[in-house]
Length: 139
Image (tube, rainbow, N blue to C red; front, side, top):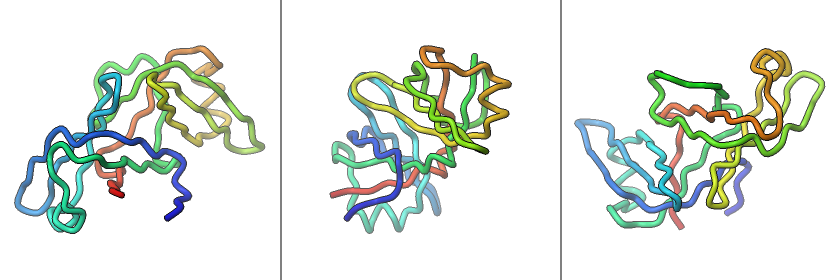
C-alpha cells in the first residue's frame, strides 16, 4: 500500500493504555523521540497491536502546527528539532523539521505564519500534533 501522507514515522509500541472507548498508544522512535496517538480500542484490536510491535505514525502535513519556544501546550506531541528546509509556495510554505536519527516532520503552513515566526533553515522549532491526529498503521 502506498500512502499520500507525508509524515510516516516508524517506531516501536512502548505502551498501550486502554480506556472505555479509546486507547493511548506511545510509539518510541530511535533516538528517544516518542509519538502519542489516541485511537479506538477497536483499532487496537483490528491492528492486533501489542507492546513491542513495530508500527507507523502517519501524520498529514496539514495537521502539523509549527511553534518556537513552546513552553506549555495541551497537544501531546511536541517534536523539537532544526528546520532543514522551507519550500515557498504562493499561499502556503512547506516547512521540514529534522528530529534527528533520520526522522523529519513536514508541515504545510501559511506564508504569513512562516514570516511572523521568523522561520529559517537552521532555526530550532517544534512540530506540534494532537494525539488524535496521529493515525497508526502496521505492516
